[in-house]
Amino acid sequence: MSIKVKIFFAFLAVFALFSVLAVFNYFDNRPKSSLSLANVQSNFDSSINSDKDGDGLSDMEEAYWNTDFQDPDSDDDGFLDGEEVASGHDPSQPGPDDLINDQNITAKLTDLAVGGLIEGTLRSDNPDYEQALEDLTLSIVDDSLYSLDPKVDMSKILIVDSSDQNQKIYAQNIQGILGDFAVEISHQAEELQTISESGGGQEAEKRFIDLFNSSSDKFLSIYNSAILIPVPENWKDLHYSLVLSIKKLSELSKGVARQQDDPLRGLTAFTLLDSSYDEAFILVQLLFDNLSKEDLLSR
Image (tube, rainbow, N blue to C red; front, side):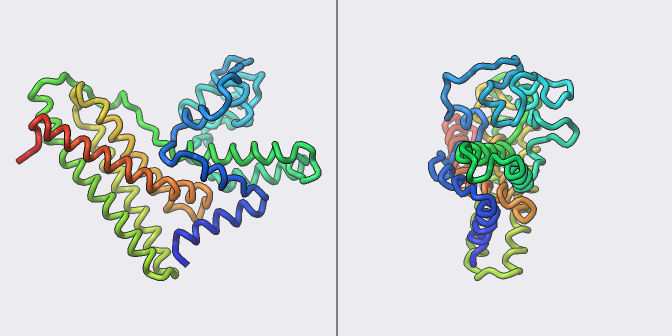
């Protein structure tokens, strides 16, 4: 059995336990390249935007975050619920262990499902069972996607004027970064193909985990280099897109590597890899094309 299939069945087993297989229909109908919380929220009815407590989360969003729509600070930690979501924190949990990226999505599903069974909302004879099941499924899927969404503080990137000299320096710096990024993407994809054809077994599983742990660290190192170089104003937008792409692949690789601890997050990360590879290669090619057009490529 291939590693990919094993991850799939790990995901399936957990969801079968709580009868929430509807999540797979959600993934099938979702655009593969969508990762941001804003894109997730745009699928909901835009007319439902009431925010009774003025905390920056609409009443509908409060339901998904399991917060009180009449309390602007549901976890009483001194921060508005909307501020916490925007900064990557769970508004229903006080700190310090409230970082969304650090949450175990599979464990959260277990807690929510058990709680629903105890209180009765997830019992099949409950008249609101289907709605409760849909809410639980969407909440877990949203959490999985948001936990993998790259968080980048763009204010840390030094933006300089677009002088010829600054552009030449940028071109010299970015070419090495682009080369390292492209090489690591290719290496990960090629190694994954080799492992998938090896017939499985414990050795293949270890190689799989080691590959993604290593790739996560390498992508993070490339990202750290990319945010340190001065960026001319006229290259800013492309550079921002690049650092987001690099950070995304680091987060996805880490999610896949830790799939034994969190199968749901691991499968979500694996599902998003293909489209993320495509986005990354398009960006690398676009940057090289623009460098060539401006006669900035090293000879």
